[in-house]
Every structure is written in structure tokens, then in C-alpha cells.
Length: 252
Image (cartoon, rainbow, N blue to C red; front, side, top):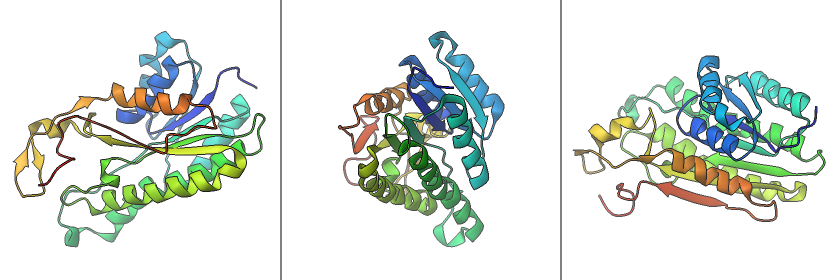
């Protein structure tokens, strides 16, 4: 079945940044395929966006399972006939413990979710986007401020987010011949369930504990919608959206 609106897949759409982006796209008139592990959370996102009257499709997906990723993209193609946007967002962190105490399994869990899954999603998006008419599409990766600077005891998360920058650049280059654009949004201190602890204080580079400013996660959704709204001959390669007063620019 063909759709008159543009089609987007958002991974990790059941909470936080993924939910904010899905809602922003729905408000902007996109048809949104919501992927994530928990069906009830995805359906709650749809309910929150009901007033937009946007078309949606809920596809419970564990992105650490390549078979489930393939099924997600096949269902999107079978239902809507094309794919215009992929937002690679699903991600996890490891426990904030000293680097030398992390188990290999904890490292691998973060790599599987934050790096391998976006790569496989990108492969599947390429396969649809390069053969559809009109040809092409856009992929936006969630990089994070951690793609630039680490927090204490965050080696798996920081390593994968640095790697996402390499994936973004490679995808942008390899996608040219198919009219596929790729960009990255680096987010700092958006108020989500994952980041809410920052209000109460988090470890700093100098060993102290300090509360950090947060911003409304809606601003992230708006930023991604802007990136997604560009014609395919224009691309925001990297965009940083952050709480203005967070301790990112500076020393310490």
C-alpha cells in the first residue's frame, strides 16, 4: 500500500528522545513506524500523538536481533511501500563502574545495541531507499555529546557514540550514489527518564558531584524534524542541541 505522506522509522520510540522525535514527526505530518522492545510503551507514544491524526505503525523490535530488524523494515515496506527517514536512536549504557571492573558481556551489550544495531538498520534502509521511486532517503543517527567528550566511567557508551560518528560519515559518503543523506544529532542533557538524575547531581571529571542543567526534550524532536525536512540535496551532517549551561564547553 502506498502512502501520500513521508514514511519514517524511529527506533527506541517508546520513551525519551525516541518518543519526542516520533511525536515531532507525527505533528509535522509524517507517517511514523515506531520500533522498540516494549509494545505498551510504543502504544503510549501513539496515544500521546493522537491529536495529530498521523498514520502510525507499532512494530515491537529488539534491535539486538538482526532477524527482528529485518522484519521491521520488511513490514514497513509491505505496509507503506517505501521509506524516507530512519532515526537510529535506540541505545543503552553500562553500569557506571570503573573501566577495569566492567565485564566483557556488559561491553558487548552496549556495542550490540548502540553500534551494531544502527549499522544493520542502515543496511536495511539502504536496500529499500536505493530501489524505490522517488529514489533515496535520509538517515539520522543519535550521536550524543558523548560522541565528543566522555563522562567518568562511561567507556562502552562513549566508545560506541564515537563510533557512530564514523558510521555517520561513512553512510553519508556511501549513500551519495543512491541519493541517501545521513546526518547526526548530538544531544546534551535533554530531560528524559535516562537523564533526570542529573538534576540531583552526577559525577564530574574532577571527582566532584554536581547538579547539571537540563532542557526540554521537545527541542530535540524539533531539531530532528528540521533535519528531516530538508530536501535530499541539502544535509545537516552534524547538529548539537544541548542545555545552554551544561558543563560541556570549558575545562573541568
